[in-house]
Structures are given as structure tokens and as C-alpha cells.
Length: 221
Image (tube, rainbow, N blue to C red):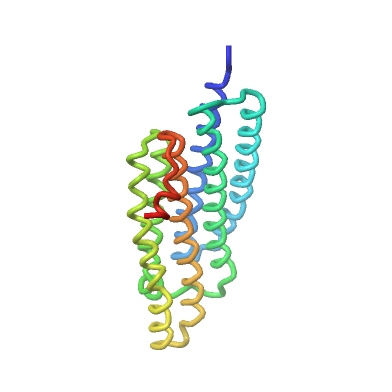
């Protein structure tokens, strides 16, 4: 009697646990930035090691399933998708940690008005909503829910596209804010990448559940 259903279920649970840990890192990175909370930065730094440990464990579990059970069809697609999703989650964890390091290196808080003017709260809300949607989609194996992130990603892209022009305007009005604005530009780039990773996770779930590769189809479109 094969044990592969149990192994696949344990793998899925590990991915969901890692996803919730990474989401928590992202939530804390926002709080650290907006509240200039250096203690929260240290907490994020400690949890980054847990994220890395999850990545190594999930990679090893995937390799063991492939080696011991030789999965086929839907089971094989799940393991392949899990490998890539694991990478996506680790990258999102890195972006949350990188935002925390920006706060760590600051000598004083960033002006809340600058944070608002650069649309940072909107970037956080959109990227975290995408990520939360994907965690729920993974849990429910719901490809329709996963497809919701594609539209939201366009919003992140638009904010990032306009961010350089906006930053130039704000610096022109108040050159003393230059350092703050440049830091916020870095945050915007990282949050836009969070959206990209969530979108990649959606593509992997669709590949797993529907045996469709949507990335290249979208590129052609």
C-alpha cells in the first residue's frame, strides 16, 4: 500500500505553514516601517532563519517523494509546483526581511507623509491581499481564486511605473526628503516583486490543478 497520499498531504501542510509564516513577516515589515520599530526588525531577522529552514525542509521532502514514490500525473505536477512555490515563498520572505533591514539602517523615522505620498500603504495592502488570496487558494486548491491575483498585480505594476516620476516631484519640492524617498523607492520595488511571486504561485497552482501552463500563454497574448 502506497504512502504517497500522506506524504503529499504533509508537503501541502508544510507549504501552508511556511506561507503563513512569510505572510506574518510581511505584516511585521509594514509595521516596522510605519512605526520605526527596531525591536520588530530584530524579530523579523530571527524569523528569517525559520523561513530558510522551511525552504530546506520542503525541498528535501519534494526530493524524497520524487525518489521514493515516482509520482505521476497530478501527483507529479503537485510536487513540481510545490518546488517552485517553495522558492516563491522564500523570495517573499527575503523581500520582507529586506524591508526590515531598510528600517534597521535608518537613523530616524521616515516622514509618515512621505510614506503616504509614495503610496506605500496601498502597495502593502495590494501585495498582502494578493499573497493572502494565494495562501487560501493553495489551501482550497481553488484555481478561480488564484486567478484573482493577476488583475491585482496590474495595480502594483502601475504604482511602480509611476513611482520614479512621483519621487522626482517630491524631492524637487523638498530636497531634505531625498534619503527617505529613495528608501521608499526601494520598498516599492520589493513589494512589486512580492506581487510577482504571488502571481507565479497562482500559475503553479493552475499548472498543478488544470495541467495548464499559463505563463507562456499570457506572454504570447
